[in-house]
Length: 244
Image (tube, rainbow, N blue to C red):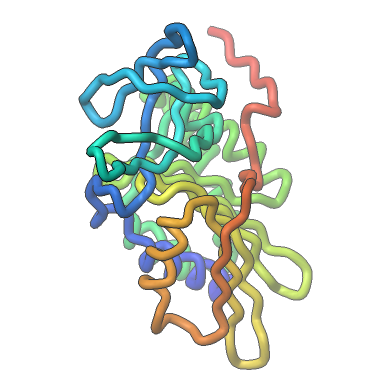
């Protein structure tokens, strides 16, 4: 189990979103502020509001990934809009975690998932835990009951969703969502003394970024583009009643 945690950690390190800044070579992150008329929407990109046209139906107050491009005439267009998982569109808390120290602790534990479960329950019992944090922790606990490690992280102000599940034959299925890269999904499979990494993205720009990042990582690596990548655990499919 420790080796699986280490493999997930190594991938997260290679895809280090804290070093990424806004640029047109990666997907963008936008918020739909308001639906206007004639397929036009008021959008928020960073701190800047603007109006753009989208043939794809968008939902107000929702957050999306997309491609930002400009043509020879200097006209900016946004395309390939993909709605972010429900947790990015909710008031649920992303836990502030020091990425390196967090995984260092897990690697030293004989049963890391048991350690995480104990941490969640202890955190839920604290008086200072906010309702938003309590909701996040509750979903983490529900995910663990389904055999899925679900961790919404806030690192240096950036939201990252990490999920993984250990399957038969000791292979790992994982899902990662970064604000500046979009969703990634794949498997890590042991093969003799090597590791096979199969990873998919929904954006061509992210595909080229990953090819560059993993160029010397592992010869047994496959990177591809898929039209749809769903989280391993989606809180929108579960009704959680937390009154009071």
